[in-house]
Length: 195
Image 1 (cartoon, rainbow, N blue to C red):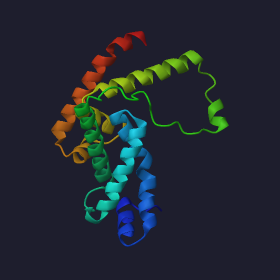
Image 2: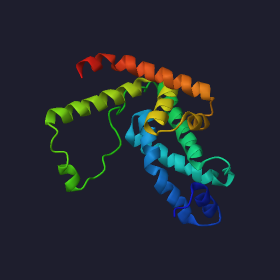
Image 3: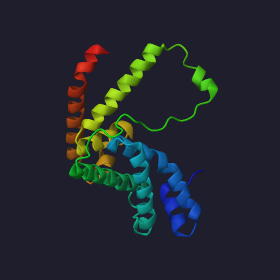
């Protein structure tokens, strides 16, 4: 049976270094993917993920176990991602830097690669173009809407947990998510007719 996040934190605080590495192992990829979707740049997301874990490492002594660890770490990651977007905006760098890059593809066994032989090259290309359109549309959302959308649609968090991560009310979460979906529908409307 795996230890809960809070048990891992307690074990680390009791002197077991491996407990912290278990937390890193569990959250490294989800946090990197989350930040990538917010800022649109995988390489910078890797750096911000490292910064997230550095801040977690330094602050574990003040972590309050009455909150979920996942909420706490996503809040740290979210704040770092939003700070990055603000920095870009101030510097005029808020372009589509690496916006179409997604998380690195995992290596698949040869059997998995052969399993999908019925799809034509045109279908695969259309699917890739569709995913790219969606990713680019998400990147055009204002940061507050983008963050809520990614937490809900990609990270599959419920409204209450999103509110805890972002430190905002349930009504604000619902409003931002509704607005994000409306903006995405408008952006993607011309493509629905073609697809």
